[in-house]
Length: 477
Image 1 (cartoon, one colour):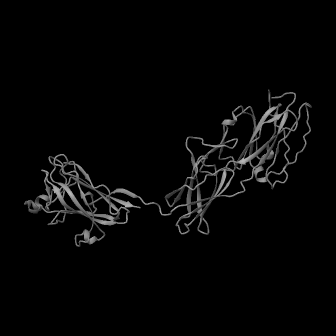
Image 2: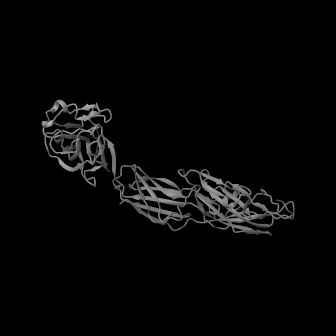
């Protein structure tokens, strides 16, 4: 069957433009030339705004696109000239086509593979209407393809209550699990393996509420809940209110913060435009503006030995060993666990028991202490137990007062001679309180027992030696 496309001028007269779906009038066209030909024209029914959108129409036979026509508006569309046969007509209208890609819509292409895709989900999404007629058999004058165009997008109005005192002018709301393309029969789909997201900016109005509106595509048809993410001053709050977004609806999301033959015919298409769903679909959402706290860290702490920081000092005494400060002044602390020669000694000595004094720089909620046993041979003495205290008094740190609060006792599991020589020992994360409710700036470590290089537990006040020390802090926020 040969067919051809005749760009005849279609006379389209719209009446009652302010009302969608009102009937249009026709101007009769007198056939000219071949008297065996009959001419039919396209009709449209639309309101003024919809009729002004750019339009495309597609003539389909046996599932393949036979021809297409475009117009700057509904009135600019030209009719299709067809042989007698059975056809369907597909149509699209969009408020703006700049952000759209029409893929697979080629002559002789399959209508099932034709798609309208959003180029950029971050940009403005236009209103999009699509529709198609039932199959129409053309064999006589007055054959008509009736097309009902429906919106394949939705409109979402968002109102965010409860943040009137927030120091911000805008908030970002991201809607996840959203389709990004639609077929010519209106079915939404994904262009890739994953769903996409659409973000919109909510701005504070005169009442202090954050409001916004966006045109969006439908969300996952199989989902029972929306996936929403609010970005408030850099903190993200995830929420999943019951419901999903469907096409052709208005939504109100209120969020509270708590070929030529002897006879050729022109197919007449009548396009009607479905109203926006007249019922406003209300969605409600709420979330706690206090973000769930979590432990953040560890953050390495620089200390005295590593530079100019004056936030760590140690005390020790040789006790009754006879060595006294003469020996331990160069052997208390090894700043490098590998070379065994970089010894460091404190400026102040304690004549009763070895201690470490640590200034965290600011009140923190947790601490990790990591050290290395002395290397070589049996590795010398090894720390066995440490009593760890906290304070917020600088006088405690300066050893002028003693109002420390005990946090815990740490026991090392790396005290075996030879085997644990040079071994890394860590307290792990020390939480001053499980819920992060306690904070200390100053830490005191007193050594209550050690293990000698022969494996004997010692509890006297002889000092302790380590190969290297590292400190890290934790915050609960």
